[in-house]
Every structure is written in structure tokens, then in C-alpha cells.
Image (cartoon, rainbow, N blue to C red):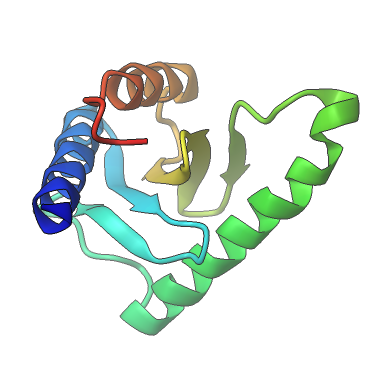
Length: 131
């Protein structure tokens, strides 16, 4: 029975990622667990990563660690809504939701607030099977 729940959980996360991928200028949407493993999501069909797979994996781990370290200040500053970094080629957005970190990469001129809103609505509407 747990495998069925796991399969439903992953499918619900995949569906949420696909909703966000529909926004313009989005390159990638992925769901990362607290170990930096991508458990759902991926690139838009026509998009190729700027990084090789092993570097993507390293980046996922670093982003999760960065988020977890920043959480140390939640009591004093409040919880993190999102973390954004604008790089030369892309904008990267990390959004904590439930037990996961949603990572989005987009073109530099993407509308960050629209993306955050879409992530929040897509991932908070997950079925009860997703903790």
C-alpha cells in the first residue's frame, strides 16, 4: 500500500511541476527533498541544461543546504517565503513548500512574483497524500 501512496505522491508533485512549467520563460521546475535529491520535475521539453547532470546534482545539494542554514534565523526573522538569485544566464528561485524545496530556473527577465504565486497555488493544492 505504501508504494501506491508513494506513486500517487510523486504523480501529484509531477502534476504541480507541470503547472508551473506552463508559465512563460520557465526552464526547469524540480522538487528537492532535504538531501538534495530531485524527486519530481524536470526541464521543459525544448530546454537543455547549462550544466552536466553531476553539476546539477551538486547544485541541488547546495541549494537545499543554503535553505536549511537560512532556516536557523526563522525564529528571529520569520520563515522564508522564497530565495532568488539572478545569474548571468538565468534566475533561480527556491520556494519551500511542505517538506520539500521547489527549485525553478527561468530566463532572467521572468516575472518572479507570478512564478512564486503559481508555485504557491500549485503546490498547496496537493492532495492529502502529500504531507
